[in-house]
Length: 318
Image (cartoon, rainbow, N blue to C red; front, side, top):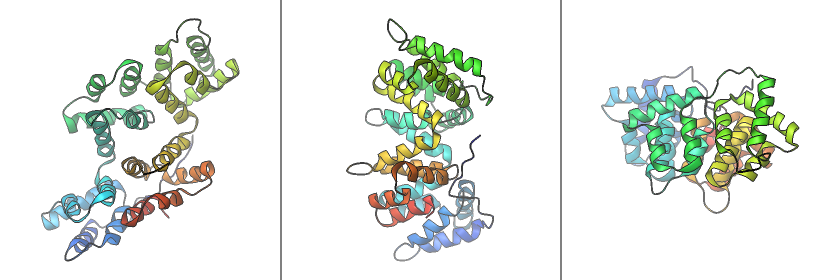
């Protein structure tokens, strides 16, 4: 099994009281010491940052989040607040915004839901219900339609097999099923078969299935998906394929997309960097260099400015 590494490690010298005092001092008087805020928030893991938030409240009777909002602004503030969110809060807030904002942000739904394990999806689903007093499945049902709704709701049902053992015989059978449901079918594509297999087999099992599919058809599974599907369902299925075949590349591509062309998708860039910082961001950095022949930090430098840039570089670990 692959072993990935994050950029923000557990700080054995964590002292919530000391950190709280530093943060309070950084915000008192004229001006704000952004350097201290960046240092304290990016040298502690999320669970330790939550302890600092609690200690700050105990010491000063004040809400650290609110104090930071009063002092900061713009994308720097957005990055700071993302670090103060719990991992689940960060993701469910993005999902809720994607569903409840002006129009549906299908890209965010795909980026988040297509890459998670069943345990992660169940935790996210429970957290969504607690935060918004509604079920994520209900919001997806109400906001989406067609095959894409079927794919997203099936993902959120968290029915994927978590057994990491690969069964070659099942992989060969599944590959034939996918072939018969798609390019080998004389009539219309059987979308339900694709969705069923993509959402119920473990990631290692799917990887073996995709290898068997290529042997069987002479073409990668991506070709079949691109030929048989279109729109959001196509994008979602291809995201699952990429997550299975190249999990680090999955995130590299999404990071690169946030910085491509004019302007920067800062909200997505922040979410990706913060959410992966304790999981695999160090490994993503290495993969990013391989894929784009430039360091992730350099790409971020080219697209950001000021203390916001300094914060993102600290998360990346430069």
